[in-house]
Length: 636
Image (cartoon, rainbow, N blue to C red):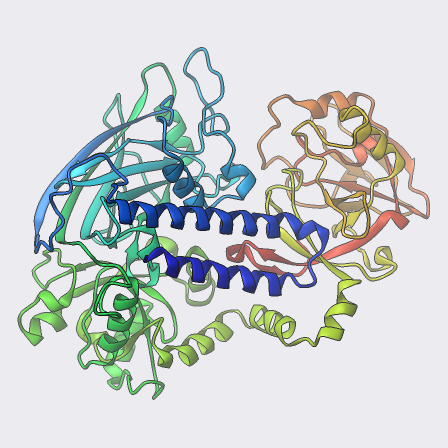
């Protein structure tokens, strides 16, 4: 019955999304649909889990001999598994498929797509043709079932980012199974045995090829990442190009190696187990709040801690020397830090300071801390000068034992709020103003502001596929447009003809070429996003046939370098440019503009369809609101 808690949580999240999208445009309907589909998946998955719980079925075909609480302190073992590029998912039950779809972080339409690789006769792959996910298959660690999943383009399937992710996933034999482990993981070229380099090493010690962490692995319904409880854990810290190179060629493969320390194995740890509030995710949340009030407080591997300063919860960094040492390490009040790994004073891996016998040993324990999330990493770099590679830092537990709360602690709210305002005041004020706006103002704003999702690669790397823009649509948008600004426009007749031609007259785009269109919240047409490089009165607009670069007034067109993106494999842009209407223009009329995409090898822009009537310009982006780690106020 524990999955019922997940149902309530999912319903609450969906209700919040409905409120946020109360003045959503048709452009956001896909997001709302995805939310509904994911809720249906949650319902079906929870139902199947309840049935399995009552029928005694197991989600994995293995022995369930480890069903009692086992104090498996410091059981050290290792693993070595292979990953091949042409491995395909074996047949899976409908329950397993529902679980995989629910855990898939991609948009729901992408999650339903096939993971099979593209057709290759010679075993050669590119970053684009590799499957979204590759797996070692299930393997046993001390009679517990795990799996390593590799995402060559990252978990969000974004090739342009250039990072690959590897995650360790736990498959409990039944709801309520938990295991506390610390582990390391390396990716090696299967043929040469050379380790693949990584960007950052997770926990300590720092390494250029080994990632480390520690977490409590549990079922999906009992996971709370802030408490160090998860169903799968890893990082996007490898490089896509290295993964592709290692998987290219007949028989090529990657080997995943690592060491594991098992600290404890438990069963029957569901939130609704009796006595209530003592087990599972609920019990862990209650315990974390109580532990944070203790002096000195205990620490646990994987949990998120929030240093405080002041009297928000009676916790305070009262010693000036401690404050100075923490700030030198990059530890500031109100910032969320995760305990990546935990060791005693002798450097031995531990999972909680409660396992140490004396107060001195608990204070001398070492926490490997790093900020939570890439967005916070970026802010720490811009505001504090701490690079991503400077993390994690090693902090003595005694420095924070009287001055660190959990995310669930009421006293952490104001320190976190103050920290957020100091790091990103503009974003805070922006979202606060939207939340506080009265209904009448929201209804008026709906006519002049809308959301727009980037559907193609035509503006990469400035705007990536899936980015969501907040667009102002006040009248006479062209009058507020300067050279170099990004604008949204309805297609002129020449572009409509190209769209109709490529879709057989259906109006539905068939090719992967970068038209850069999305749903137009003002009507039934599509809106397009490009950068204005030519204004009325500009002369001598020419395209270099060799480089496809454009010159305006005898000078290179404004904007970022337009060769920082991937080519479209079929090079359809070359066909369209042969008869391009904007390759040689003597002068722009008083009602005309010239627009380009930021990716010249993909973008269908004024080189192809000619000049853009200024009356077709309907809006300008004023913020990029999603993804949150790339939030930005202003025009890109």
